[in-house]
Amino acid sequence: MLVNMKDLLSDAQKRNYAVGSFSVANMEMVLGVIKAAEETRSPIILQIAEVRLNHSPLALIGPLMVAAAEAADVPVAVHLDHGKTLCCIEQALDIGFTSVMFDGSHLPVEENIAVTKDVALLAREYGAAVEAEIGCVGGSEDGSEDIAINCTSPEQAKRFAAETKVDALAIAIGNAHGNYKEEPHLRFDILEKVHELVSVPLVLHGGTGISEKDFIRCHQSGIKKINIATATFDSVERSVRESYEGGRIHGYYDLHQAEIDGAYKNAKRHMGVFYSVQKSDDINLF
Image (cartoon, rainbow, N blue to C red; front, top):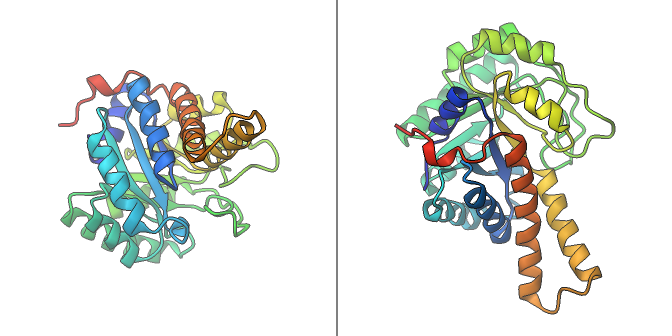
């Protein structure tokens, strides 16, 4: 069932779990993530970042994601991650995405606030939720840039949330996109202070490589949406490679199934860590 992200995160706040937001790039990944969600009875978010659209055009992947959400028997929000341009954000909303992110983390805070407010006004016309980012998560979504981490100021986060009235706020606490070069050391002191000052659900980007212990501490300290991208892509690639090496691929549909299996296994593992298992059947969306 296609739902608004705001409703999923509100339930996660009430029942102390996190919703997995899984980046997808093709039909097989969508099928694998949905399979894991239905099997574990987990609410989820399907997402794709604007920077990935050169590989998976929004006009093609977007309707597929929406249709999959509508057909699922668990609550599924469909989200544009790291939207950079109003044109792309509006296209996602026209397709039927139920939430969009404007990533103004590279802008001065005043400009980030101003543009985020414009995006929020647009999204409200569609009944969609809005995520934004304050501070700067390391790396870039597609690995093409080595962006330095700029941890979120709790006071700026408080002001940003109050002025923009976003539905979810991504913060930087030492997290980074892609595979970490060394074990990440998250700034839980910053997270706990932001959680104290900000009532809106918080978002963790750069989830790949974070330990289960740290994931649990995050979602117990205000993080209610956790993005998983690289881990899914890596799991799909690994599943395909191991299937070839094991002699299990004898044609296209074996390859198709190996991709589904890779996305499914990764999503299912994370749903357990996020405590979202068995939450979908009792979720209150009204």
